[in-house]
Length: 468
Image (cartoon, rainbow, N blue to C red; front, side):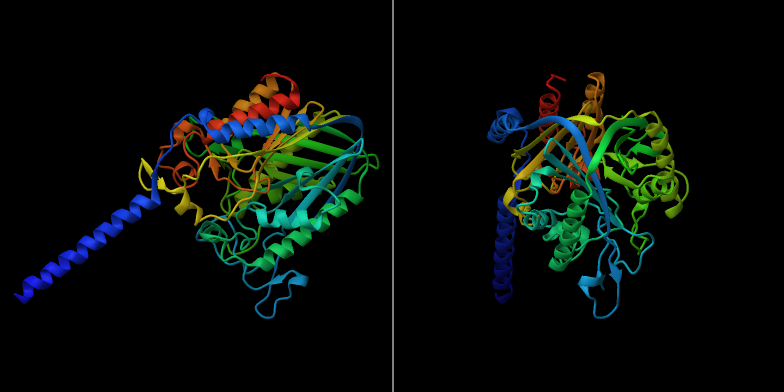
């Protein structure tokens, strides 16, 4: 009798647990949203916001001014009593790998670099750091530091996307999984560095001239979703500014992930973009910068292992850059168009449960850092168009827009990590592939890529006064 009573109690416990499990799954998951994005409220709101931004766009022409600056952002490792004012830390995790290590030294120094330009009183700053990305909290602090000097909307943030750089500066489960435990002092330290960098670049402005170009480097990049048969955005895009005193700054934009250095490494490094920059500067370029381009589906390809591979890719890219630079023609009179627009996005559909289910927006939002209003930025300098995006755009998507711009007579650059992060944006046809890019990092549903590409084309059309 007693045995039967215990059995009934045990069954009731199992029934309650099963009910709780069903309720948890019901309230913490959603079916994947597949409704047409162009029928959504977020799409209609975004189009209205973009039209308003277009009416307020900056457009001017005149003599170009440009200023250059760099700052070392390499943390110094110390075991005891670190002094942040001296760049000292005793536990910085290298960002980008979920199983990455705490840095215990430096293989090659990390830098942030900036170019400030001005045309007829209208100013922009291009800033890139040897980091996996520039975290939004850092950007917001820089914005606060520079209040009354230059608006955040006039700063084009970017990163080289090296996975052997500074972590510990994004809160939340996902941020801490990729970057290590959140340390507010790292945000304060980095934002102070970048604030000083921007001020120094603006102070350095002198009459200058500008040019752009590109060269293909298919031997250094691969489609990591499809492989050899996949389409490639294999262009190394080049932007160059030369001051009248002879000083020259060069920006390279390329779409291969900076992941030649894996979790085996425990020292800071700029990966192949660091070698690219150092090689150009060793060849007489006063300031060489690198922005990660359409890295959402592209990885690197090259000879050698570990740091030898980094060196091979970076120096090969620098040699290609010199070929492009030799052909570029400069203009001192520049037509500048600049647009900064806010966009809205669909509800979060992050974190795969099954082919039909993702975590609910409520549950998913608990794992990600809170994000503020989202910026999409576009610039045109003469026949060059630059779109700065808050996500990792697939190279296949990027190729479509870049080819359309090239047919219309424009060089272009599409860069990721402009101070916010929306994950990977890959073509809808790959959404259900069992891949890292789509399954783990595709956070906003299968229509997100087509939606964002419509916005990118809309922005490019407005910058070029055309229909691509």
